[in-house]
Image (cartoon, rainbow, N blue to C red; front, side, top):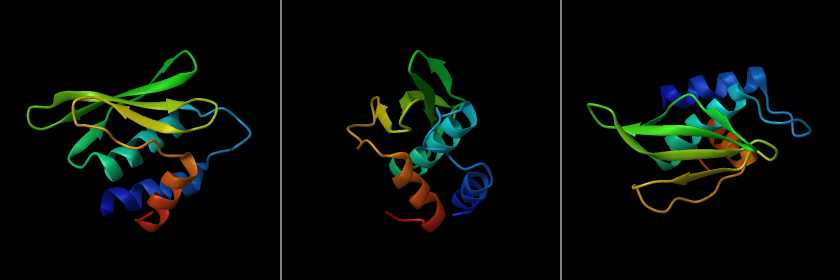
Length: 105
């Protein structure tokens, strides 16, 4: 829950402007929120810009083991996951902000 509180503070301080592209900081917050919501016990690494989207490697376990990729659309902020941990839903930036602020969907 502490991780969610820290994310909430950061999102409220920075905000995500709907009219502008998602920045690297925004992408990190969205990837971290997505990991907290859909990939328990996983951590999203710093996102890297790949054309029209950000990609954040996901690691899990000890020692940290690569466990797929979180993809953040640069224009819309929609977030998805591709990797060995199974099918996960695509989440909007608004849904993840709500999750960060209130701790549930």
